[in-house]
Image (cartoon, rainbow, N blue to C red; front, side, top):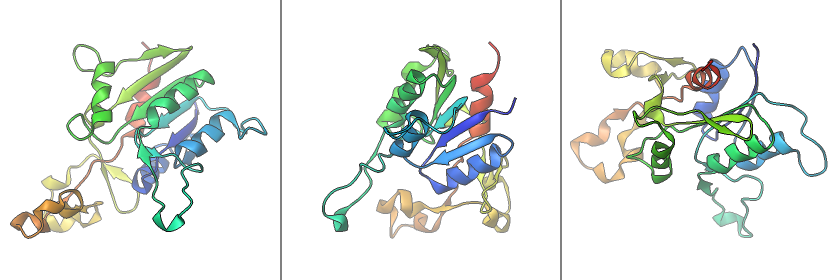
Length: 210
C-alpha cells in the first residue's frame, strides 16, 4: 500500500533522511507544529488539502508561525515537546496511524523519558488505541540503529567500525557541540556520530498486523 504520510521534523538532517527512507510513499514534510496542524486541520478558512494515513512526528520542535515576539533581534524559536499534543490532534482528526519518534533516550531529555511510561513491562513500544487511531511512541533505543550520510541517505554500518578516512561520508558533530565543557581537554577534537531517525522502521512497526 502506498501511504499518504505527513512527517513533522525541524532538523534538516532528519528531514533528508525521511525523504530518502520514505521515497516510495506520498510524502509531505513540514518543520514545526503550526505547519503540521495546518496540514491536518486546515488554516481556519479552508479544509486541509490532503488526507493522511500516517503521521510520523518528532518530539521536540518549534511552535512555528505563532512563535514570534515583538523584538525580532531577540527572536529564537521556542523548542518544546509539541509532538505529544500533535499526536492527539492527529487522532482527533482520524489519521489512522500515528508515531512520535525521538532521537533522544530517557537519559538525555525528561520529555523523552516520559515515553517509558507508554511501553510494555518488557520495555517495548506499545500500540495505544486512541479515538480509532493507533498511536506509538519511540525513543532512539526502540528502533534499529542507522546513521546519516552527508548525501542525506542512511546506513546501518556503524562509523566507529570503519577506518577513520572512511568516516568522512558520515554526518558528524564535534564533541564540543554537545559538551562545551570539554573545551581544552584531549577529548575536544573527537567527532560524534549521532544516529539518524529510523522513520521506515517506525512506520513498519506501526502498521504491521497484530
